[in-house]
Length: 298
Ligand SMILES: [Fe+2]
Image (cartoon, rainbow, N blue to C red):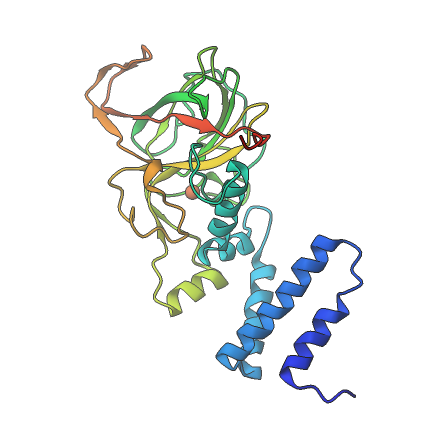
């Protein structure tokens, strides 16, 4: 048996991955080993502590289901999801840094593919607790040219801070829908104004948040995936301006550019012609999508 010192151990494990045929996988595994070893050395990790870590990850896997993806929540609460989002957006913009496209943020654990395709103006908030809100705006490219037929896939929690998938073991879709922009790139639909909510805290991630005194709340937001041919799909939120926790998002997803004032209106005719018998809100936001192919440097 080799007489390992710590540096040789790390070098030998990296070397063990040297024959990985896929060069990208080789790069990822080598870096993972180096950083894992460096982490253990930095904190002088004990066997008991590493066993606790293994138990934590085991519990994270065991509680996970398709509708309860605890590992996504772990990635979100460690800020890793937001780091990956940021890297992807920088890559899409062709430069690490400024971009003219709408800022992206985390997808989160509650996306449910297959929401119904609905006509513009549909109310996806019917029967959902919360104050009615008209969402409206445009989808354009980075030059402001309207994108007709762009797809908005929309989902949110309700006015009590609950997503449909959290309401029962056999949930039905609520506050979800897919809309396509009109010829001028416009969209509009009705839903409710989502409120702040705690990330699921009855599993291992919740336990981690508690013992580290972390805030478990996210500010109110509605999720959007916006896509159009020839453009990078944008996964983002519109945040409710003034929401509690707007400056301490538990998953670090809030961006100032995504915070919108939800204007309050008295009962009456809304701009889309709907007659409202109760007060309602409106939230206006324009999405700018990055081109899928990077332009050649001038
Ligand atoms: Fe959310």
